[in-house]
Length: 230
Image 1 (spheres, rainbow, N blue to C red):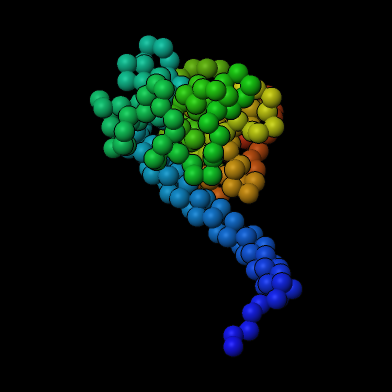
Image 2 (cartoon, one colour):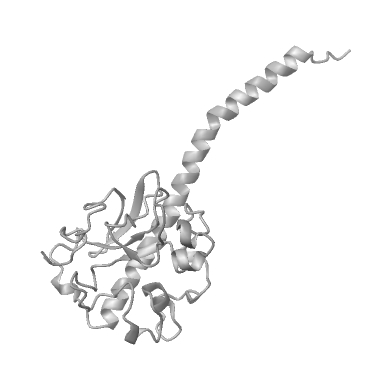
């Protein structure tokens, strides 16, 4: 005759399963976060490469995160310009109005539809179709004059190019549309407090923090400035 489980034995088995599950969950969570960070890094590397294609196409001039009003025939922001059918620096779907971040422009670790009090219900106005941003001081000087050549970069291995962007969860309001800047804490530290970023020399790393955080004069470091603007 087969022995039946008693209620106590069944409860013991359930308790053991629960303990094992609680031990495995943190490991599974870490593995998932690592996979997201790795996929995100591959996006950053490809986008960073697209900047080099831009340099080759446009006589060594850096792209501008937000284009001036008289240069917007193919897009107002770098992500729209890079993917426009007339440009096609990146052979993916054109990033245009009303689109949510997708594919190459989507960080798998970012799950917010919108950000900030004003734009939380508008993905487009929050992100402009991309979870990645371009260093605002590459093509735009602090005095707002435009068009900078990459040859002026003093320390290419130190100067940020493209990386994770966000509006920090602790920010009361705002958006994260196209650029990276320290003043508004736009570098997206969504990977366990770190962010993926590519540099002007082409290498990409998982970076912890960044200089001049929340400083209004946020360009006085070669991490942000290709040349000495101060």
